Amino acid sequence: MANHKSAIKRMRQNVVRRTRNRKYRSTMRTEIKKLSDAIDAGDAAAAKAQLPITVGFIQRVAQKGVIHRKQAARRVSRLSRAVNALSS
Image (cartoon, rainbow, N blue to C red; front, side):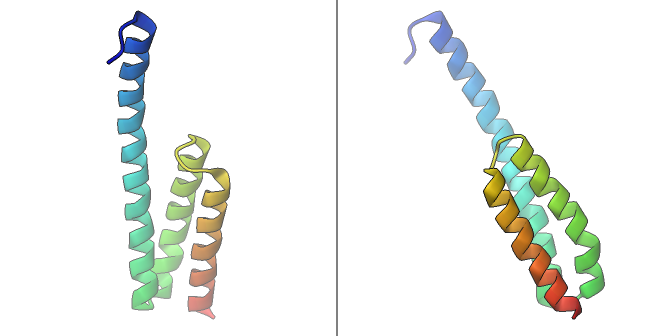
């Protein structure tokens, strides 16, 4: 347990940030699942409509530092490839 003032404040900040990051990560996974479900169902129109929403959210989460920018790029690349393969 923290004993001095700055460590106590740091612990409070960590709790807030951890909670916020968990929310962003969970929402990102939900958006990815929505897109994956559309891809698995073979619904090209729904997948194309969901792709910009999902990509935007992944990039926003990366910008906030919740996930690494290269991880975000990798996820966007794989999802885009899957949607493009579905339409062709």
